[in-house]
Image 1 (spheres, rainbow, N blue to C red):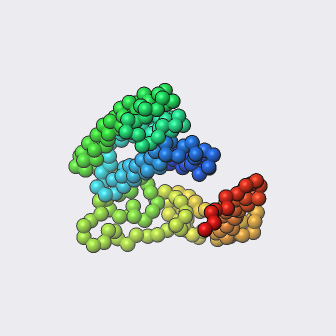
Image 2 (image 1 turned 90 degrees about the horizontal axis):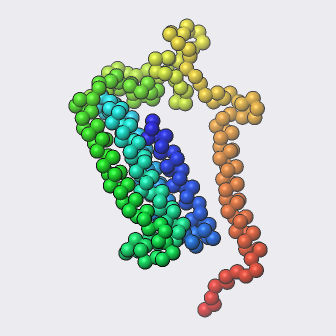
Image 3 (image 1 turned 60 degrees about the vertical axis):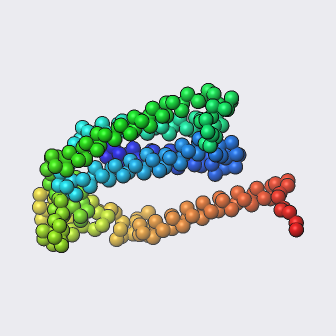
Length: 265
């Protein structure tokens, strides 16, 4: 969960810092600087790797029948979170100071950027520490394969069908010991021990599964189904997005005192 939650702001930082690069007044200054490096790597490094680690920790019990050590997992997360930001966050500062991304001396020749050159050393130290922070994960991964705590087939109390299979799944054909019983819709939720019952059946140890409302009945406020409302909201957002893009071009074109006309041949 830590890695899954951290993925959201890390990926968000990567996306939001790309917006100034799409605006000409800002991109003239930021183009080909360390700002671009920071923006890109917040998407592909913490934004992607944190989601990958979240998936590894989540699926490990299903693959091996054992869980990874929580303490080593937390050590791995917090050190990775701190050092990966230590590597890429200072790049935004250097980029705003005008340090180019392609310099053989790392910007030492830039007299106007000497105030941020010390960040190169800081980022290098964080990069080495980030590599060392993966040691707890490597130890945890291989140690847990043979010595990790054995857990039930559905350790996370997940509601999707694959967790009804054995952990780890058998090598022979067929993963389920018996045909699984599907007792809820794809978008309904309840803990797996609480089965969806019809109104005529008595509850067996718990309340009925919680359904997402208005999937089969019209919404009382709009009179339409969720699916129809969703597609209309999607289309409206597309109209607003592309309408803003094209109208911005029209305003710039009409309001410009001069406009590039190209060269005649």
